[in-house]
Length: 241
Ligand code: SAM
Image 1: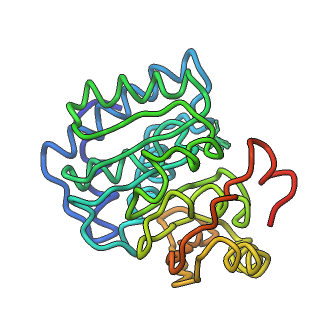
Image 2: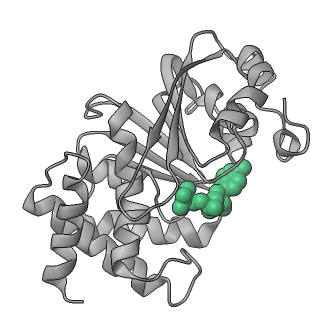
């Protein structure tokens, strides 16, 4: 598949969500795809290796978050457990004036992200190699974001302990979830009450070529998160709220 095909892939995929990409955005997705394929030869960033599948299952799936968000330009968004940049980096390409923080605990992954951000010429992107539990205690991140997002990192009640401390009051958490979304929301009743969140919406999203719908779970932060959360590294996962 040549560069021109890849450029069209991203544009066509985005169009299925009603999004129009500029030529510069198409080029950025093409560069991102190229870097992902090259680095994936050496470090394990994704099990998905076909360009067309990367476009739908990573780029388009990430862009689908925009269906439940207003224009993110000038907003502060943090993506926790971002791996190779999903969903944060595609959203940054879509909304170039958004202030983005990408977090992962694995240095190899954050090294990849630094390279992508440099080569795509993206500005106002902060990349942090840290555990989510530690980040939520740091004054420069706590209560600092309009949106805290995550895909494929932990079950919802664990994720809420990572993400709600990072949101400002009136901000939102967005969790991309699979079939178990409704069940996870139910199991998170105590976590929501303890951490200051309320379920705002649970929207199914159907992407081309995917049999199962996935869900965008949006939680509003309606009360301050008590100081004792997040608990120390490993505890949210071992003893979910
Ligand atoms: N969000 C990306 C995606 O959907 O492609 C990556 C998903 S991958 C399955 C989970 C990522 O979360 C890994 O890169 C892992 O290093 C990171 N991670 C898991 N727990 C974490 C924590 N407590 N703090 C920071 N990163 C974490």
